Figure 1: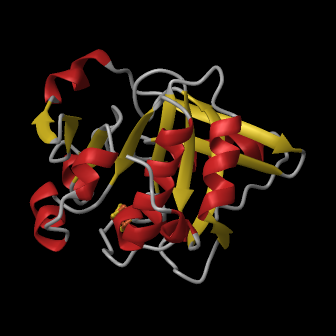
Figure 2: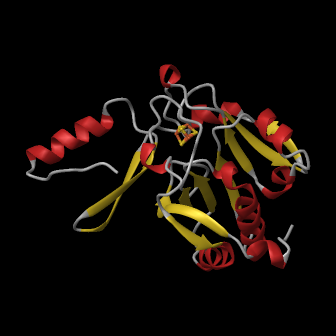
Amino acid sequence: MQAPAHSLSIALRLNRIQAPVTNLGPGRRIALWVQGCSLGCPGCMSPSMQDRDGGRDVDVRTLAEGLAAAAAGFDGLTISGGEPFQQYGALMALCSYYKALCPRTVLVYTGYRIAELERDHPERAFHKTLDYLIDGRYLRRRHDGRWRGSTNQRLYRFLTGQAVECNPWWSYTEKTMMLSVPDALHATMAGIPERGDLARLRRAMRSSGIKMRLR
Ligand code: SF4
């Protein structure tokens, strides 16, 4: 399903892009984090991505074309955040145009339950646009780490417009974190850290004489 040309004339609030990422969905993927989330889960692992004024606006058409041009060698695109469904128009336009440009899968993480999304978007365009959805608020007491933040979250596969739950997949995935160092001053991480991982990393860096600031 290709997005109508007029719907591409909008901006997506973006935090960052990292690739390759192999721990946020099947295969080797490009991962994109949107900026802005008002759900306020206690213990959120991405607090810096909650502020809607952070990040930067990017043109959806330019972004989709750039992601499609870089898609060779990747199995698909993973979108997290932040809360992608709080930018629903931009999200649907980005995903549908991206998929029209290159045959890759799209997986989206959301803090909403699928029933909330179906209530708020009764046309259910996301059933036809996305391939996978991981749904639900992050619950600190049920922390997990295999693709999902906590064990209440579920994985759905959209097949011919129907949402099919496929949670047994969790048992095949390992807990990993991926560190990317784009330059001497910055590093980005992808994956679901275990409790205390970031504090341990900070201590290890400090013992090597490197001061780490989390953003
Ligand atoms: S939905 Fe995700 S980004 Fe938003 S507060 Fe919850 S854990 Fe954080």
